[in-house]
Image: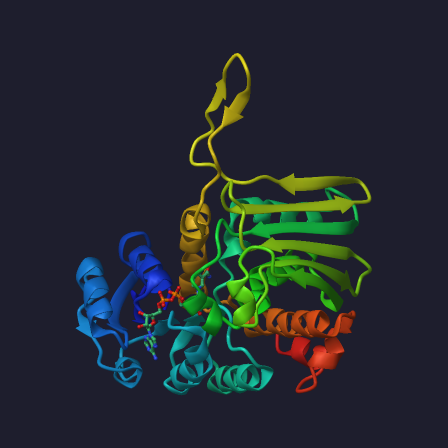
Length: 351
Ligand SMILES: NC(=O)c1ccc[n+]([C@@H]2O[C@H](COP(=O)([O-])OP(=O)(O)OC[C@H]3O[C@@H](n4cnc5c(N)ncnc54)[C@H](O)[C@@H]3O)[C@@H](O)[C@H]2O)c1
């Protein structure tokens, strides 16, 4: 497989589908985009034209029926992911699926079972693991550079809330937005969270309350190894996309700052200032999207495990469900309370 060109199909030609299509078409050698499909045929045609994809399939079934296709990227809305994973696995295709896998554990477990039974690879789209800053933080933990981690603090604030139409179907702030931070917390500390406590509110836009969601939250995480984590989320940061991490360890600390389009510093008679950080996730995390695709393609071509497994997709969903319950019931929630379908220990066996 390693010398052969990897043939890939894409389901979903929206925002993230386009990003991945362009990465595979223009940035990664050894890959051929064979087919694309979207319920909005026009969207699929546009991406096909731009990226030189020869087949625009009428349906997911038609796309997955391409006999010489090795792998598929699932970039459609979240409520379609689990069933498309099942279909793709049953067709023997390796799978890259955007986050989250699904909103509930029953669907997630069915999809992961299908992947397991088919023996295909699955990578979940937690792209932030492939960001150079966050990878460096993980390295400081694994090498012992800062000693034993004691405190993790993640700041994750969007520049502005998405439209209500998006929020309504997003699964809520914890499932849609914090899920990246839940993944980052597990990845950076290298251990599982056992208890979550949330203090959340609607402070940015009262309309968000009308669809049952929040826009502001502080989330406390207690890890099995004793580390205490905190996540600071807001749907609005007027100064740009605010994405920072700090870990305090027994021998020191590591922190990352925001990324900026330029590093210019302007000094005047009254102040010293610089331009605002990147304002959009596509810009802030541009390189990470390329690196996650490279990692998926290499895993398939070289027959290695993917770096973001099905369990890595499942655990943040468990954490999101626990966070919502903690908010609703105003109390700390242990993950065992949520994870009735499969115990934590059992889930970890499938890693
Ligand atoms: N990892 C990240 O940073 C990141 C960023 C953005 C979106 N996402 C995830 O990617 C997914 C898509 O988000 P988006 O922002 O690209 O949405 P989008 O609405 O821009 O695009 C989704 C596309 O899928 C199409 N579609 C709907 N049902 C389909 C089906 N059954 N088969 C094929 N296509 C179908 C829609 O017509 C649309 O063109 C979501 O699950 C989201 O959570 C992840």
